[in-house]
Image (tube, rainbow, N blue to C red):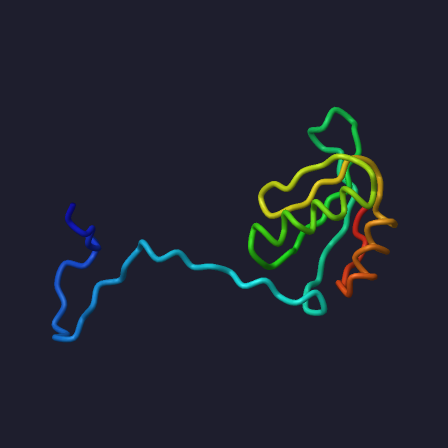
Length: 113
């Protein structure tokens, strides 16, 4: 099978030109907890009135985000999920999540009602 080339370059006068390879995916490095600024909020929009604790602003890989979500869910003793770069914890656990994250050296702030 032939190697896929970049179809967007029409012509280049640079003799050392190397086409950009789209196959290399850019991997985001996970910042250490001290550099993270997480936002904890309560959300009940489009959830039939059920409340969830929402943790946003995590900068890092999906695996690290899922691991943090798994840890928070088990410490709170409830269910939840990790979707679209956000951690969702079932129920109103804002204060408990804030304490757990601060104990793990994350910077976080409570937001919203």
